[in-house]
Image 1 (cartoon, rainbow, N blue to C red):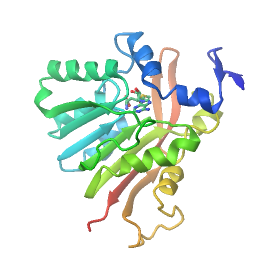
Image 2: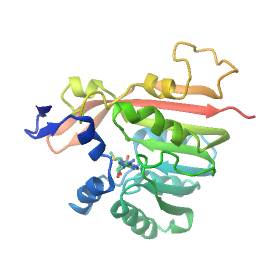
Image 3: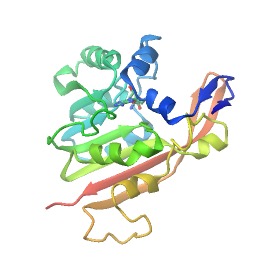
Image 4: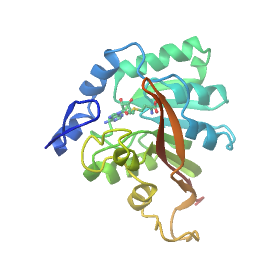
Length: 237
Ligand SMILES: C[S@@+](CC[C@H](N)C(=O)[O-])C[C@H]1O[C@@H](n2cnc3c(N)ncnc32)[C@H](O)[C@@H]1O
């Protein structure tokens, strides 16, 4: 299946093609194609959510070039930043040196498609993942693996593009249903989205499950977009 986007590209929406967009080769090529793909600024949602937390240890999953990781390190967090792209990880290391926070940041290779668990038994006070959109059939396994890295009493923060951005033409969808709402995260972790009272059976307490608007600056001017933001706390014990 192919579709036209507003940029006029053709996109193959098969599951195979979606998985291809989650490979080291694909991201090394993307990062290798320019000196800087992202702004270097931290994501607004991370700043909003993490500013309320006392700094501790944090795992930044799919960290990209390290905008979030460097901001977290500056706030006093001890950061582990992981990604499938070694090109991106080299940038994180370089930017951390430039920012003088290299003693607060470790980087590591992580391929969610090869093994969804980023930390293999290590746990963190905060696990944050910004804009990682696996193919829908792979979603639950990937996010469950990521959630395993949250320490008892620790937090999971998921920020993503909301599916409404496809309908408004703000971005293409890479394929059927890769952008997601908060419910997809809750369902993957077995948290009942209809149950707002925190049931003690669930290991997770829902602090935030929201879909806030934001204005994104683009070369074509400001663009209204929507985010998915989920913040959970793993219960003690
Ligand atoms: C849209 S970027 C977001 C980067 C960063 N979190 C940010 O907000 O700037 C998605 C990131 O996911 C990483 N990624 C893609 N597939 C992955 C996989 N299979 N395992 C780990 N990371 C992956 C990419 O290399 C890329 O850095």
